Image (cartoon, rainbow, N blue to C red):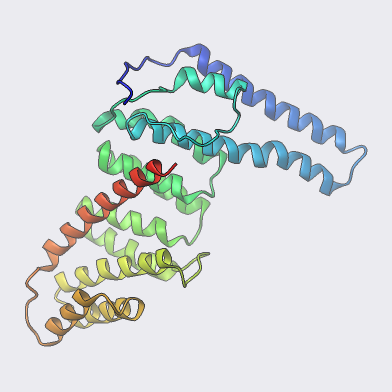
Length: 287
């Protein structure tokens, strides 16, 4: 196992090199596009621009996201081939980013935000980056205000995305902004499935989570018919979830569930946060 190493404050030289390199790439793309205008069609000009401002942006976005994950998950790198290997981008990044095992927690999580911000700028359609940014800000860095800003930007750049509303609802619930949480979960249900396929587990599970949060909030408001309706929709998606069926029967019989809605909401928030952390660590372990 690699030993932890001390992190150094990024030097201005590294940032300047990275900024200069991107500016050079952008300038070259503009030059090529302009030159191509004299000899190529519009489609060809678009393809030249796409090479520099499309594919390169996606590669840079992924690379910046990897750097942020390296910080967050103890400094362990992915073993897969990285974009821009042995390039000016890689050299600059190696001076800014730690390459060994480190430990990041609490307020230190804010140090990865510049990388995630660059990643979203390069690829604003990658909802995953926004969701992870908001999660790390809201749960690890203790900055729910910044997490909310990230999610608002995510929704602007990815209209009608139910995952963004699900994360907003969780954030509001954690901050005990119940009215805002209800609106977010309702919006998520209205937006579902968005651009996702309805027959995948993740997409169905996303709707089930929205429904369960909403059911528990209805139940806390003593609106049992609405709560039962949401729970029955979950059973339509996942008939094997017997605990949901048992809660439906309890509510229909007019009885009080053994796990009160307020306690169930708190447990669900914690479980979702733990699951997200586990999934991210598992993802890195498989690389």
